[in-house]
Amino acid sequence: MKERMSLSVEKISQQLVSAIVVLFGLYITGKIYMAGQFVLALACLAILAFGVFVYTSSRAYPYRYLFPGLIATLVFVVFPIVYTFAISFTNYSSRNLLTFERAKQYFLEQTYTVENGKTYAFTLHRDGHAFRVRLEDEQATVYVSPALALYKGPIVVEANVPAPGDAPLGDPVDTKVLISYLNNLKLVSFQLPNGQLVSVTGLHEYAAVKKLYKENADGSLVNQQDNSVLTANKKTGFFETSAGEPLTPGYTVQVGWAQYAKIFSDTSFSEPFLRIFAWTITFAGLTVLFAFSVGIVLAVLMEWDALRGRAFYQTMFFIPYTVPAFISILIFKGLFNQNTGEINQILTFIFGLHPSWFSTPFLAKSMLLIVNTWLGFPYMMVVCMGLIKAIPADLYEASAIAGSGPLTNFFKITLPLIIKPMTPLLIASFAFNFNNVMLIALLTGGRPDFLDTKVPAGTTDLLVSFTYRIAFEDSGANFGLAAAISTVLFIMVAILSLINMRLTKVNAQEAR
Image (cartoon, rainbow, N blue to C red; front, side, top):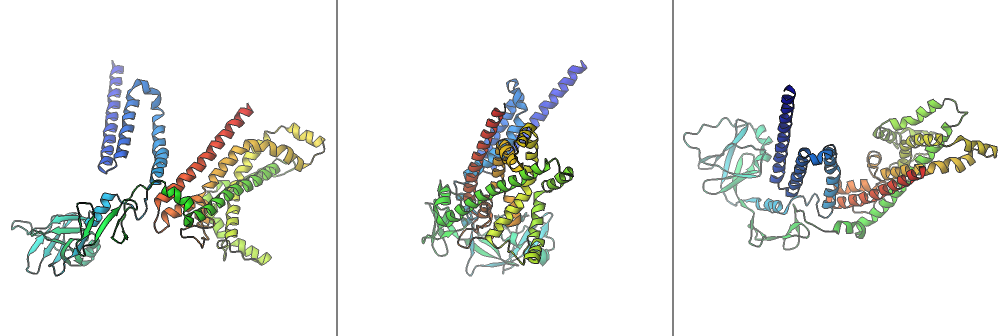
């Protein structure tokens, strides 16, 4: 009886928790829908429905353990990829952030001060956690606003003559407080009983204003001051004057494959893109070559029987891998400093050289390769040491009987037997360094910059850092173009990953 009761209580508690989760999920979905994100709300609703099915149906029992992982994959992997791909087909940028309706509303909310219109002195009064505004015209007519939360806006509210029974206002805030809220007050316009609209025009003054633009039946906007007309250009995402001059803010529109075409067809962009692409391939390839070369040579030395203190050397060579990469990079940035860095001080003392590591393109690229080799060789060394131990000792004994030396053993036995199982790791290392944005960002920032480009691009930029600069450093902050480059990078890395998986599979089959 007690076991039945405990099972019943447990089942009820599980159902209660499930109901709370479902209600919370519906609440979040409703909030997303109210924010205007219909597709995202529909996706959330589908995931919620699938979750309810998985955890209530006996047929879907095995999926209960996979469901959290599937959701995490959808949210943190699939969604960013799909969202980035979708953005790449738009003109989304710092100048085209809004939707069409919101951009149009921005223009319709603009006002201008009426010439020879009435002015109103105003004071700001606290009302609990909110504020109220008191307006007074030249005839001493007083208008009072309702309680306002000044962090909201832009808004239009009514201000009326206070009734005799209304509670009196408190003391007005001092000038310091008024100044701190002045930008918020600029977002608040008041509609007076006579229909007049007033807005802030000074520290203690409201004045009569009118709407600057009026919408026509065809969707164009007429400027009520000079009768000029703004027309929405659905191709560029801007409201334009009759002369074709675009006005900000713009709005987001679909541009098809234009961003991808720009990568390869617009010379102002394609030229630095191709140069940076070539350097990215070179950087990733040379990094893998140098790190593997240093790693395998040290691994062979660590397996030398006559070497004493092997454990000490292994520990010292592995230290660069244990130190966080960003710390090592910043240390090297100080060491390579042109004026105070220890490397330049040593070179000046011994050879009389004073290299400009950060301002000369060739030296900056060399510095990147040196630092990245330092960061990467310990991993290569450890992997190669493990593979060398798997090589049968009989091969080296036979080679010694044949009179072969260390170089012959290395190139005829060690390297051929290591390179095949190392190939997937080398490809993975190439793919990682293809997108090694942390090294570029912390050490050179992509600089020195090209002098013959209109877009922000540097001689040491990789495609990923170039994408970042296009998205966040360019004056236009072209997110759509950056998304297109990111998609191209994703395809490249995906191809490398497929090759890596293929080679891993082939090696595993041969090992059997």
